[in-house]
Length: 254
Image (cartoon, rainbow, N blue to C red):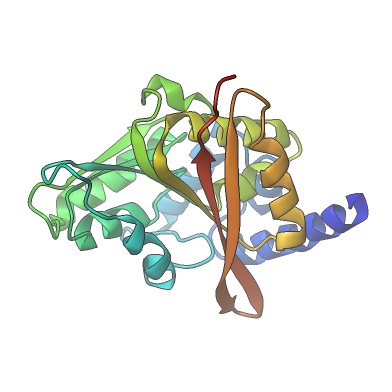
């Protein structure tokens, strides 16, 4: 398993390099330090200063590629006026969170969170300039600076309905010092999710590696447990992508 995981890491770094090649001169630094706030601050500062107009930067793919995985989970609750709490974790300057806000027929409060205040500011300015309107008039959209290893500082236990992670866990796992942070983020997600909620991780990592990691990290005897599943998103530019769904499982106290 070590050799298998190592080969995936090498391959994934090549994919990240290809993705970033035309966006930043910080490619090498990003690959090695994607768990660091300072790296992303530099990346978004450089990207915004080199482009004449704002453009969303998408890891892997955009909303249209994964909307069929996300939208069915946005179901109305027993209370008709309930607003679903949705977190786009490590949002960067992606259009994913705003797209959920725009397309959800049920009321949602979409929080787009990122460790970089530069990314947060750029998205706030962009959304204000575009005057994006929601599908449901009760829906809300916000951008917050947040280290996702500390989700408990923004959310109470069992308060979130859906967490979307498009590449954030991948970035942590592929950093020199990020694997421990990735495990911490997963545990934080399980603590803030409702029992009916889900975490969706979109990744190019093969199920042989990611499923084992998720199943191991999401289990803590007597404290937390989760069910883990996977579906294939599809192939893009010769790379296969997957949707990993993690659902908290109720712990029965003896």
